[in-house]
Image (cartoon, rainbow, N blue to C red; front, top):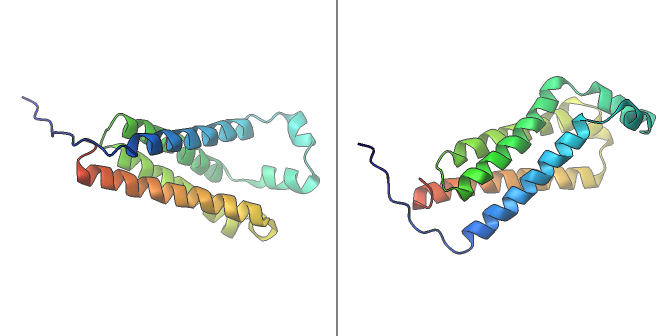
Length: 146
């Protein structure tokens, strides 16, 4: 016999926040797919500096981005379905964000050449990632997910 924990009703703001976070992560998935499916013609249209940065990305950094966006989307779906494993998917997503940021800002030349908008956007991505882990943890502790 399987015993399931009772799920406490979530507050009214929970579902809209989860839907907004899912849309955010799906936009990240679309951006990732657009990036990894660039044709040789598309790359040729980039400046020489952009081409060099694009070509110099290690596969682990590209993989970290994939984990960040796909695990983030999966975690948001799990929150929507009120599943406890959402937290682990969102932790994996945050780990992907951190790995991608380590490459971008610490290990590549892009960090020294990055514009303020890059720092702000990646900062926002990081804050959202942390926020989603905190939300999943709170949802689990409050019994909103099981």
